[in-house]
Length: 290
Image (cartoon, rainbow, N blue to C red; front, side):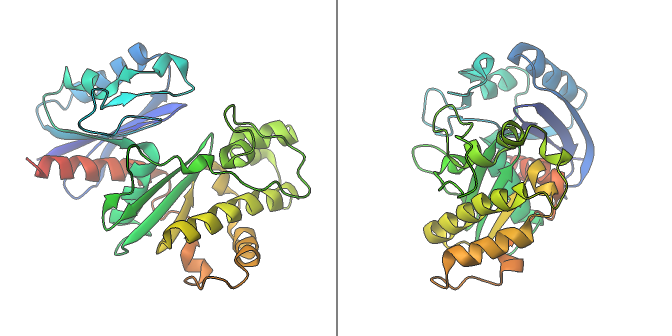
């Protein structure tokens, strides 16, 4: 049986999995993101047990990363705030141990691809996916290809207008009041003094959060006119979508006619498996290119 590998390299944890050609997950494990030496050693140990059957690996990594195949630093994590991981040759380290094709993209691109292949984006031409969690990241697909140029998008750092009832200055070390700086999990905790999952569903803060996510969807709509916008990540475990839909409609004010909002701004079908399935699909594609 052909086996494909998946690596979701997150800022707080790594998720490694193997799956079959039908993109069914056979086994999945996770471990904390520590130093590159310790974490990548754990990745290699995990996949060594499948070395004979493993045909390719798909990697979705926290970033920024170098995605240009002709670049001398292709496969590297680059200017990440995680200082130990700056300019780590992730793909190169894997290739020292596994002489197989390796697909390489961002973690949010991988989740976007998973939803495109097997989730809410299936059958659609244009899909945008955001993860709202420890950080905020965005990925976009157009006709099955990632939207990128000299690098991958950094949509989580789009600037947003401050909510009228929000005095928080922002948590991003680069931009303060960008989307990540205002709406990611650490920004919520710094603002209200507790983690988002500890807030009740009727806490007035969630209206502020919904406003920022609606601004994100508004900007995305005007830039890309996608078929669907998917919001995943830990913060979205709250029932935010009705508030996001309402705030989005008020912001758009009838200017652009979108698909019905319940089908347009949605949560992922695949849940926490979106990135894993996306990595498996990318690994399978990479294998098929040979």
